[in-house]
Length: 79
Image 1 (cartoon, helix red, strand yellow):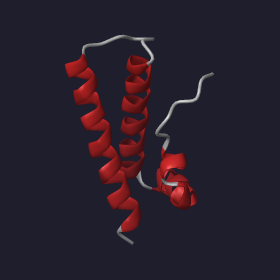
Image 2 (image 1 turned 180 degrees about the horizontal axis):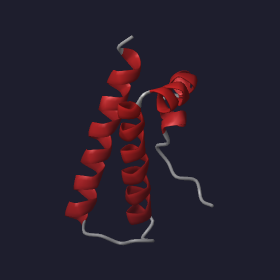
Image 3 (image 1 turned 60 degrees about the vertical axis):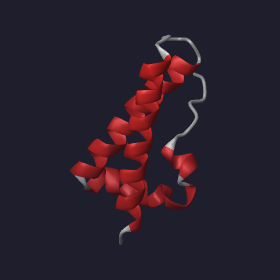
Image 4 (image 1 turned 120 degrees about the vertical axis):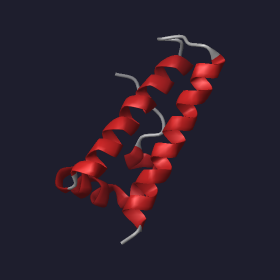
């Protein structure tokens, strides 16, 4: 299996334990991370031409990924 860049555990390494705990205990947080992982894989597959797409669609997917990452970061740092 190839390495997919922008994994949450790598981008937010200092919060890896908190992310795992929240994924198990908070349904809303879990849905955010599930959505993030799904769009992140889709972006990676488009960037590597496994599933080619238009530049406009790729740009929209990247924006969605960034918005989710911002929400996740806000969630894990608000305590």
